[in-house]
Amino acid sequence: MTDPTALPNFPPPADEHPVRGRVLDVLGDFGLAPNLDADGDVAFVANEQQLFLRSFEGQPSVIRVFGQWAIQDELKGDRLHLLEVCNEVSLNMNCVTTGIALETLVVSSEHLVPEGADLAQILTIAIQSVLQGVHIWHQRALGIDPNDPSEAPEAVPGDEVDGGQS
Image (cartoon, rainbow, N blue to C red):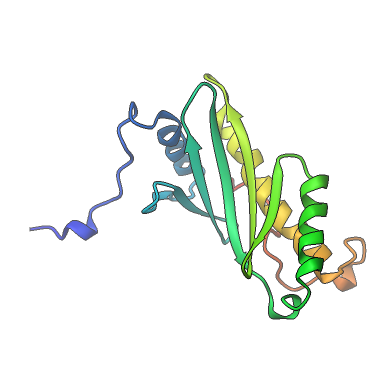
């Protein structure tokens, strides 16, 4: 007999959550191996970053792509600075919201999905937006000049943004 925990994570029936089902198909086409988590969110890894997608069914439907990152110890001392950077990034980027929850940076991007919309294109934009938002947040929080390559950190989340497509 097969171990039930070893069974693949099948998507819900198409008529139950149509947008989420389409999202699972598109992310699978991108090669991102999406899974449903306990909250019903779609979990996937893009550019070595754990991201999530929550869909809200309706007319039109809405998708939210988001991720959470632990804030580096050297930044935890000045919460006002962190919130100012969140505000700056949120105001300067289209469709991106940043915030601090305890000691965690949360970056999200929300998009309307009208019936017949090119979901692959919407997801590419949403994923790139979140990863770019994280990258910009870290640059600004650490005081890195994006025009000075000598100040570039070795590894900042969001580098080499491609939306998960090869």
